[in-house]
Image 1 (spheres, protein in one colour):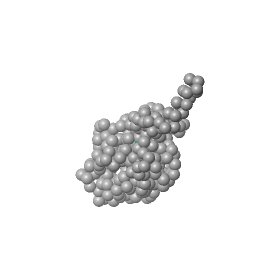
Image 2: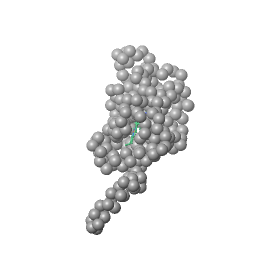
Image 3: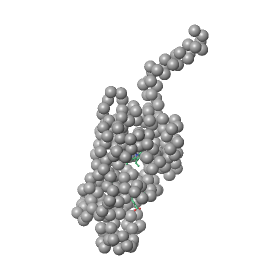
Image 4: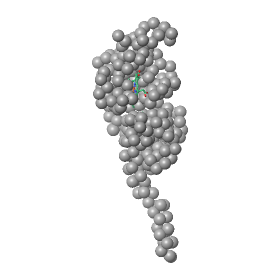
Amino acid sequence: MSPRASLVALALAAASCGDTERLAPLAERGALLAADARVTRSQYNGFSCLTCHAVSPAAQGQRALPGATLQGAARRPSFWGGEVTNLREAVERCWTGFMRGVPADLDGPDGQAIGAWLDALAPEGSTEGAAAVTTTWTRVVRDPGEGGDRARAQAVWGRACATCHGALETGAGRLGPLVSVLPRDTITEHCDDDIAAVGYTDRQAYIRAIATEKTRHGSFLGYAGVMPPFSTEALSDDEMRDLAALFRCP
Ligand code: HEC
Ligand code: HEC
């Protein structure tokens, strides 16, 4: 065998039997990218994958995150509550809709590294996290009513909203200047709305409905922005009612 032929043979052998070993550094790079908001190359993006997703239930802890845990996700039969059956498309929704990325970058080296990382979180033979995740989206949002508890809402806020919005009232620690300071911004923007024109007579009911609609729909169903929607599994209707009580018109 010529030296060149043996080199080729070596390379081929490495490619066929060393697959898992070759994957490791790529997956490792993917893990770093998953925690990095710069990955989509948008100056307006402040989110990383791990802003909205935990790797495992243990890593999630008591946090209420809008995205499902990612361990096993690469093996799931469907995503986004059954709306999507293709993993790349599931990720692309996040990449373009929340992180302001361009789809082509998902096919480049960074996208491939993230794909390798997702694969490595669903290793051969393991079924952990591989079942489709039940996700229920509230289509029509109403005022959740007056029964919310503002003290309980503080705790829900800490588990679900503070990562992005920072502290209530001041916004201290929020993810960036494009993230609203709450409840202030919603009150400033909506308490003077013509509520009769949209069928409301009670201003407090109206502002609760606005807060609930944004939380349940995020940037979907006609809403602008990059906030993710919270399903009823991620945030219960009781928790939503408590949060809505934080929003009161003067
Ligand atoms: C701003 C929040 C947010 C960011 C950032 C985000 N996601 Fe998501 N992601 C969601 C939401 C909301 C869903 C839909 C709920 C669900 O099915 O998990 C989702 C769904 C998914 C799903 C489908 C999970 C399933 O079982 O349905 C995958 C996979 C996924 N995201 C991966 C990623 C990756 C990889 C990144 C980073 C490149 C990322 N996401 C960034 C919020 C986010
Ligand atoms: C992943 C980051 C993220 C999380 C988590 C998040 N938000 Fe947001 N939210 C945003 C961003 C960014 C905006 C600014 C508008 C936009 O881009 O969608 C926003 C805007 C809003 C608004 C509209 C403010 C206005 O101008 O009227 C409301 C209401 C709101 N969020 C409520 C919540 C609540 C309640 C929670 C917790 C259940 C929450 N958000 C969790 C990112 C987030």
